[in-house]
Image (cartoon, rainbow, N blue to C red):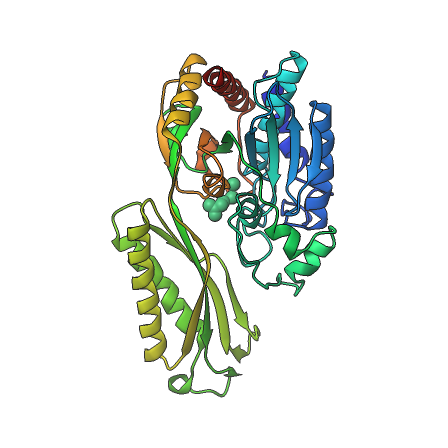
Amino acid sequence: MVSGGGMRAVERCRALGQAPFSDMAGGLYRGWLSPAHRASVAQLAAWMAEAGMTTHVDGAANLIGRYPGTGNGPPLIIGSHIDSVRDGGVYDGPLGVMLGIECVAALHAAGRRMPFAIEVIAFGDEEGSRFPAAMLTSKALAGLLDTVPDMADAQGVTLAQALGEWGLSPQTLRAARHPGALAYLEAHIEQGPVLEAEGLALGVVTGIAAQLRYEVTVMGQAGHAGTSAMPLRRDALAGSAEMILAIERIAQADASDLVATVGRIEAAPGAANVIAGQVRFTIDVRAGEAVRRDHAAAAILAEIATIAAQRGLGVSHRLIHDLPPSPCDPALMEQLEAALVAAGHPPRRLVSGAGHDAMNLAHLAPTAMLFIRCRDGISHNPAEHVEPADAQGALAVMLGFIDNLGASCA
Ligand code: GLV
Ligand code: MN
Ligand code: MN
């Protein structure tokens, strides 16, 4: 039976997995700036206050809890995200925030102050959970958001309207830059099977793979499903199906860590007896190196254009997300690994194929990431599971890391 901060962190993630902290019945979906997001921010602010922090919401709707240090220098930021994919798991993101709160709660209970302040941040848009963009709030915090694109969610609510409901605006979002940090630490479930396969609870992340995301629009001709002869059709959905299989083939032919995914598709007008006249789908391409990612993306876009031409379809694409690979800081990796070993874990370093807010925070401060094993490597799925004992282990390592960082500042 595990007790302590790790257990409480896990329980709190589970508590945020349902109404009023979820926007869907019977599962978890927490979209950025949604009612569920707002309820979660209020609950987390209460937990942060209980742990000894003052709290505020910045211009990007990031919740920031602050625990003062003995000095006036830049803070250590510990953070992760609280938005989720549709019908997702409860730990992807929130566990890193809850463990940050537990770090502060432990220091506060012991009456300890570090030489630096600690800020725990709950980011809101890591997943691209609502609008056709992703990681906007950590981008804003890192000062990387020069322009805020005009965009709307699936219901037609614009970003400006959604921000307005929080008393915020595209201007406050763009201006939400943080003044600077000593370091950034993010704990996150691995979302893959490596640690579990090796019988390890925890690992130190060396870096995060580069990402590209496109929205593709395929234009055909809508028509009657009963009367249009097959050779005369310009079926945008059949053409998209061929494109999607080509994307899979191109990614499979690359024997490296390259991956490509079509995770969302919409056909219009969307009726059983109408040939699809227009289709929109997304493509997500990732690799450890930007060159391999870009090479595959170029091959994919060329193949899509060829298929469209062969089928008499129109096609256009829009880049909606582009992040370079993000290496973690070597000195912080050493400090995190030292804490891992001191807590009795074998050292293990691994790359992250999943994206994290740390990719943006790397522009503000040196970053470190701790991975926590999750059952069967399953994530972005309600079956996501973390053992409380592993969360407890992660908390001990994070506290060790904070001590190591304190010692290095002395
Ligand atoms: C976030 O979960 C991502 O890697 O897309
Ligand atoms: Mn995720
Ligand atoms: Mn995540």
